[in-house]
Image (cartoon, rainbow, N blue to C red; front, side, top):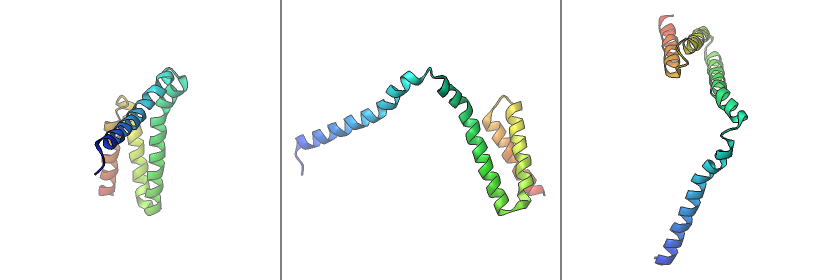
Length: 108
């Protein structure tokens, strides 16, 4: 069994590394909080990620079966319309788009 001093030094090293890794992002972000670039990136990034996810979803939908592609396009349009019309509430818009897609696939 290792000695008590060895265990305390190992715990100390683990503590120092963990503390440094957790504190480092906050220390690095402090000067960047006023950055115009990061503010712009924070504004456009969610929309960009959603466009990429929607594109991949439509590609997968078209690759498996062309019959569901029109349903997916209508549901995408409903999602965008609800998102812009309901105060940019993501939960409501994605829910409306999902319900539209499921309803269209179940009906047609």
